[in-house]
Amino acid sequence: MKLQGKVAMISGGSKGLGADLARRFVEEGANVSLCARHPEGAADLATELRAGGGQCLVIGCDVTDEAEVASWVAATVAEFGRVDVLVNNASVLGARAPIAEYPADVWRTVIDVNLTGAFLVAKACIEPLSDAGGSMIHISSGVGDHGRPNWGAYCASKNGLEALSEMLAGELADAGVRSNAVDPGAMRTVMRAEAYPDEDPAGVPTPYQISDVFVYLASDEAAGVTGQRLRARDFEWPQTEGAS
Image 1: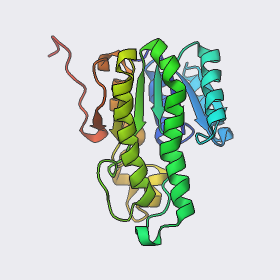
Image 2: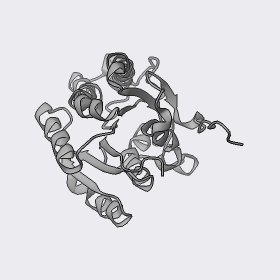
Image 3: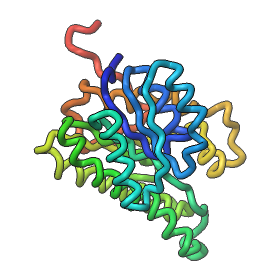
């Protein structure tokens, strides 16, 4: 087990990538703290994780609300005594439209959740992660390293998130906290179906199937890895010295 005894916080943890990362992390020995705007949607997942031997805390939290974020972090530390890993996963898609037609209210909502929310969660986790020498993992996108037409605020938010991840890597290096961004690529989620309604989901991997890179970044094996952008579909577990 690569995450034995670690405590991982996952925002947007009730479904999709967040839920599958919770499953994988528990399989690897971690305890998880999940936040969701509608925590009742995570009740079955929490039952599943506990039945599998993991400890799971589910907290209702709007990541755009600084007080609610602080309460989630405090509840996690009170429950588990530490935080080793943060997965900044909470995200919304918004409109697929050219800028000339993009609704300003939708723009604000997407930036608020995807970028400001990630900032608030990361900021609140700095102290406990510094105590543990922990890892921040920020969920980016294939549109996170360039400007793709008609992706609007989602594209802008993910570009901003990658810059935030690099800033955190530099600012927190002396505290022993790592910060990396991951482009998960195509995966079978509700958000993917909204973005590509004509796509056959059978040809797209599940989030669980691309979860190795997240386990790696959460583990002690990635102790020297920070300020990077990794692509989940290209990831291969590094060979350890002496491995065949």
